[in-house]
Image (cartoon, rainbow, N blue to C red; front, side, top):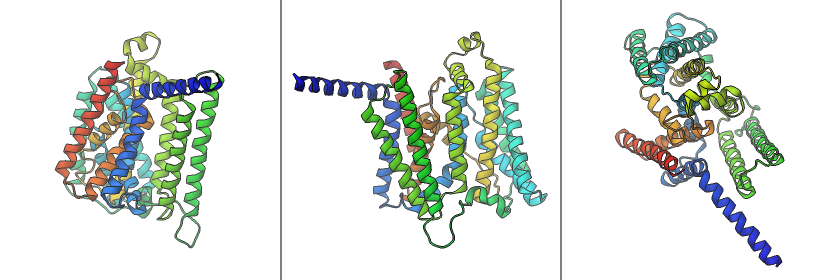
Length: 398
């Protein structure tokens, strides 16, 4: 009898795990996809992908994509799209370059002015979309053309640079460490503390769920997921610490990810954005000011695009007429690959971040392997189409 009971319990647990994975295949499949892609390129590049120098470059190359993906996800969840972000990146970088190089304005003031400029751009586009009810596709397509043209006009078709060292540190600087030695102990300590904090909050959330009988994730999967997270963060921190430490932009990026993940999942405005994308009419009838919410979503996107423009310009140490070209495609692809639905109402911040790193690892890995830019575009297009097809398939299935 005891053996039968144990066997029955084990069988039920297996069914429970299988059912849970079936209903959450997109979330867990996304993380596994990133791991598989990284292992694949690590093998194909003979270990180059995980080298500290390449990992640092990977962070620097994709920081602005990740930052813009945070705002783009909220816009897609709200049922809209923004095609202008790449042009805004180039335009803001051009304005910053002219102010610092030609007008000799202090880079701190330039930073603040450019963020306000980004907010104004997002507010202007959001005003037409929210209050005039013009489709976001049309408004942001017009914005893409306008700001690309303004970028060319401001720079006069030429590159402008270099920038002050203090401004460059936004993208190329690293956290200070103890003098002497090659290993960055401060960066490793910060990485370990962040890992402990993430595990702590995950455990606390699960205990709260169990307290209210809301815990759905099987314990075995919970343990496995947190072990993978801990190993991943510690290994990542160790590799970066063995080179130059944690880049400044990584700290900014992580802080923004934490903030936006909290806003999207644990605040009233976050829940309202999901309600807006799920059913705008129902959201409006329930008392949500959908017009103002849409306006704020685009204003937020403008600020993040401006920040990304400053980071990109600081990394290149120059503003170029082609800066930001095609960025909107990588940002939108990151969100859709990360599980956002084209119809709105569905998507997670962490999913968009993972999607951005999937795109980034693919770009980096294919470049190391010598794959031409033509085939890179083809492969990314196929991956994007496959991600959207999976979204449609699971929607129909459910």
